[in-house]
Length: 201
Image (cartoon, rainbow, N blue to C red; front, side, top):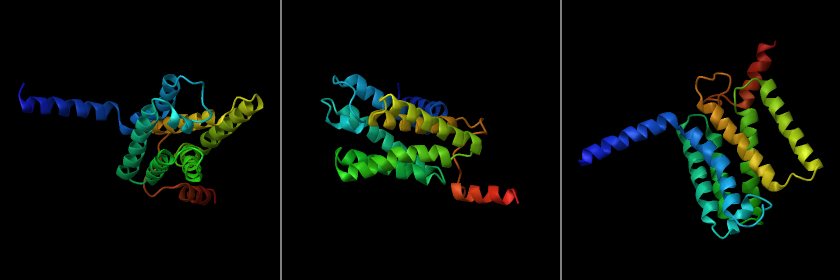
């Protein structure tokens, strides 16, 4: 096989991957799979938080998937106009990786990342308000129920956050679904609220 043939094959494969596995779907896989892989690889019982897996024996399974996820967040935030919040989340995830669990900076970056995931789906999508706030209410009641039975640990709270941002990216990747998309350039939760208020006058 000639060198040009190899390049042609690589180009075709790359084009197919971009078509069928856009960046948003890759992010969904990373967000959901990374913590589950850590749990499977680590011989210890479920740890108190996802961040606690930095000290697992095979801790490349902690650092590598989350580093890949951070880069995907940042690239998505830079390449998709108006999606600046994704590079903020990616930067926060890098900060989470750079500082060990227990340090104040780690806590700040972890809170920014995991709380930001939930905020993005509630406020930075164009889904109807009743869907967005209904979703927030469901998550709140699930958290309360888990707290009531003593099942809500920090690991579960963080994993639910990753499920939420994964669902956001997955829904946004289906362009034919016009009922759910991430907000585009020039739109934000505040401008949307002003427009809705003006339309009711």
